[in-house]
Length: 339
Image 1 (cartoon, rainbow, N blue to C red):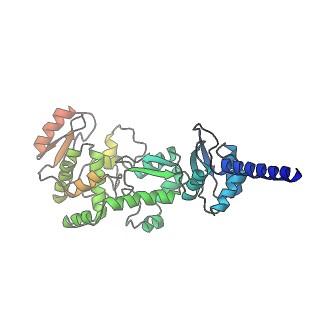
Image 2 (image 1 turned 180 degrees about the horizontal axis):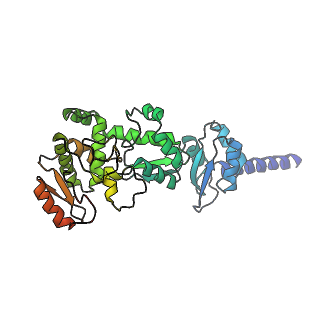
Image 3 (image 1 turned 90 degrees about the vertical axis):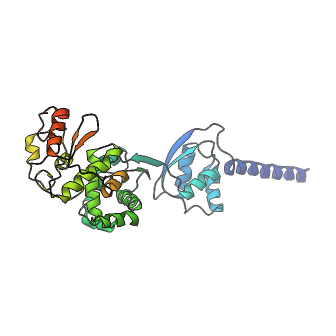
């Protein structure tokens, strides 16, 4: 009888251990899906991680989870970051996500025509980077050179696109990714086209940034490009309004005559040729338009106040268009015209 009782106790013990191990290693804690965001610190031990998961109700037992980590030799291979786990996930699924670093990715859309300053502000608003850190790196000559950009700043090279970054991504990596995207869309083929026009990459980016700020209509980009190419060829000032306000971070949309007279290298009313640098970060369509001007002789354009522009080849035509669409508006320089 004693032997039988001992045998029975052993069987029950083994069965109990097997059941608890099965529940701890293979079963989710609940049959309902309740999501929890768990942040794994960079210096967290595997024991700490197991405790965090248990506190959130994502695993049944820290002990069995730690044992699973030992079995799979995963204790030192988990990645820090934010994770989105739920209560129907099995312990093995959670451990696999931790090892592969399947962290939460936050999307951020960088609109075409945003300046580097606006990019930094947007990243800050999305909680992805400190604005001051972005602004510092954008103008850090050593960092700029490290990304292969032959320019004083990264203005113009932060390609507009939708990006996905995990929380706590280093600002350097964020900017590196954006410049890397620029390199992807400005390959050797486009560089060859720029050479055919006797333009450097930087000149293309500068011109594209102006085109980007002048219009949001795709069909107008080649036309505006043609106006600027024609003016550059004739050595006429570009007279582009967006270049004037580039160095006015608090510009509220109200124009004054004093703005047109500001002695700044970016004032394309006072200085012929391209400004010294890009005034925004252009998208692909503006980059292509900068190198593919329409075959027209236009030298002027003026807003129709509906998002489109009226283009003219002569000053007489242009003045008529200004009178028609701007109705002699109070803002000086109501359109692009010679000084």
